[in-house]
Image (tube, rainbow, N blue to C red; front, top):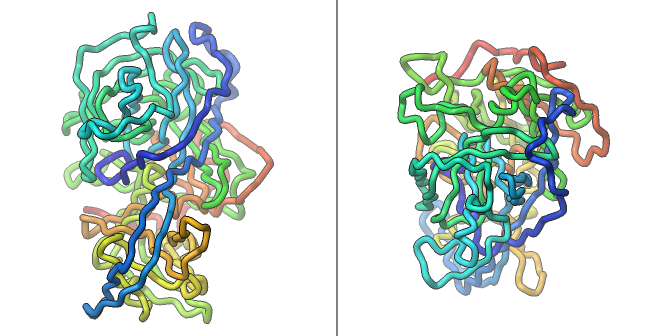
Length: 447
């Protein structure tokens, strides 16, 4: 989530692409079938760390020491776009948890990730945009600045220019060109306009972000998109703007209302979020344990966050189910023996629609520099600052097919058909095709 809870993208990410042809951004697109499919990339960042004699704190306060070296990787999902009359190729993190698009300025070349440090010197491997070379770029002379709870900042200037995605040119797209940030990758925010950084509670300060521009340009009929992250170990992913790919899910799609975070006006929508009615732990014997104790949560569906976040009460309830679980102060993760976790599943109940996800999807495997897999795994759940909200990141969404309708304020969820080589895309012109309302559709979370 490139909103206040995005995990910082690591400085040693390695990803190179320049395989797309040069698109004629001056030519009006006449080839859209009412949808645009973008190929997504699962991009990894390696984080090496050596810890010797780390103290693991049990829940009862006692400590145990184990010695290990470890390596693990975080990841994010990205797409490639072309910007300006010069057609600069830029890779962007796809983020349902924010609404602004921002790209790296070419002025960042050679000093990415160095906003607050002169010791780092890294090339901008994900591409930059030189607005001085684009004759079609319009500088708004307005400052852009966004900060996150993890301490990262992005600072630049607002403007608009032509953007091409998968060969489809889109005119007058608003975005920021960033010249100071700790991140190495820009962001494609595709959330609600009320979440745009230009909006400080005044809806007149919103603008048409990229999905809205697609609709205004006639490339899509509705402001909708379908997300297929395709499992935790596969690099192939896709997002279809204005359409749904029926080959990428199995079973039925269930329709859920987007929750409003406004107490005064329930028709105002800020976030791509639904109601999580209950969360349960399912063991190998078929026994389910309710972890949420009857409390409903607003569940933010966030492709911009590698890991999921739970409120402290819910996180503690989950961890209490494992007698041998331990906590590492230095790493900031609960640790569990990997073999123990393999027999558990988590059941997410969305207003009567259940999605079962193996607990293994939420594990971090630690590997020594010599390639030996450690017997201890980290549980990827992070602690949420809010008591009534959860963030479901890529570790959850990788097994789910998600259809977001920002016009009608509904979201359809289904089980993803992993590694599907087929394609059966239908343009969304009215309601989401093949989706039926959840059993408890009217029983939503409210602030």
